[in-house]
Image 1 (cartoon, helix red, strand yellow):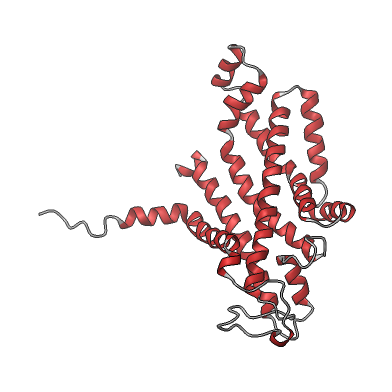
Image 2 (cartoon, rainbow, N blue to C red; image 1 turned 90 degrees about the horizontal axis):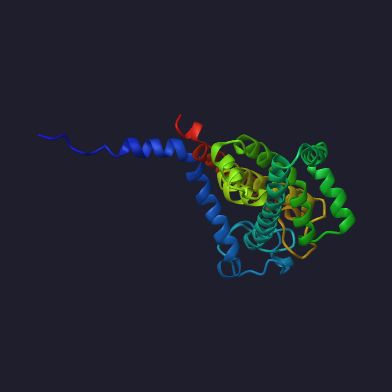
Length: 286
């Protein structure tokens, strides 16, 4: 008689959860965040900017699921609308940083020694300064707005992508298929676009997921300092700053945006670590 098949599917499932558990945790968290942000006007009927002095600092209940803040505004609605700003800033700034860093890193690795020295020493100089300090200086000079936040955060994270792309390109530019393309007379731009770039997408994706978490922290920090989107636009960092001044009334208005920032950054970091384990052949075969 054959043995029953019960339990035979458990080891693969257990192995899958053990190997990709970080991605399994991160994707649902990010999915809830994206759905809540995109569907904020439909899912949450309260106006995030509507003041109601009679309902200020209410405890969570049926009408206000997470309660109200010190001005009587619905916290859940403000969190959902603030997530839209946070995700837009993070996605746009990371895209800008990835494009700029990929271009600079590949050119530095494939061009001559002089171009490589200029580009990489410039990136090293930018990395010498804490991003938050440069962000405060530049946004103060340009003025607080969503567009300025995207530009500043994107430029500040270009060096991270540049170093990743530069090292990855150096590792494969002398391989046989690259030499073959060069021997066939392909231009440098064609070699980078067709032979090198498709083979270095894995570290770029990992760096992008990690940079998204850092971008959210940067946007929240600048908003906390009053350099984010101007009022009455809801922002997680501004919610923390405003609720912190009324902590003696209730801690919940301060707790919810702080938890949203923490769990979102955690989700992006878990996603980055999971993608690294998934896309790196040395770690995947371990």
